[in-house]
Length: 181
Image (cartoon, rainbow, N blue to C red; front, side, top):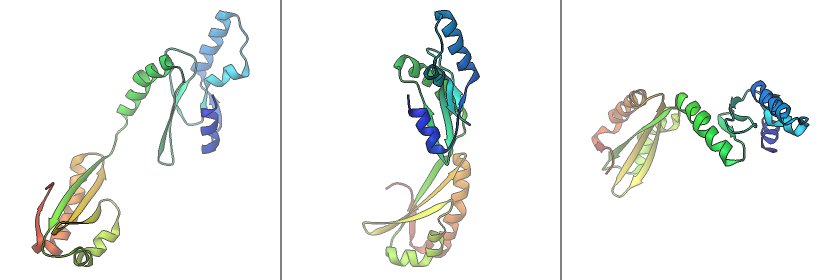
């Protein structure tokens, strides 16, 4: 299995040995009265900084890690091993992590074109932090989609509110509603 070596090299991390899986390998070798080879020992290794995922049906350790805003999951190949690892290790791990939510509101405007709307609120559109605002041209209207990312929907809505208020102060006379059509 070259996956863990490839990921470790890509991320500039060393492979380290997970003690629990190493002990399982040693115990298996003693039971079978076999010598452990270097390729056997690789089954107990994972990239440094990764969270080990216990293998309940085999010997190869799984791993979960985050690096540079990306999540990586390493699972053993045999289905009887990785299916149980996903169910017993990965799903609970991911469920325990707080996930951010996206909340959006679509505002509808009639009576001015997209270029006029962008001229009036161009500085708000240009900020593009969190929350964001994006204009869309529709049939006979212009839409603005306001989107915020937060730990929960209530916080995301609270972030959108002042942006909505600022937009309405400038072009509220053209506003006729929010939401889906």
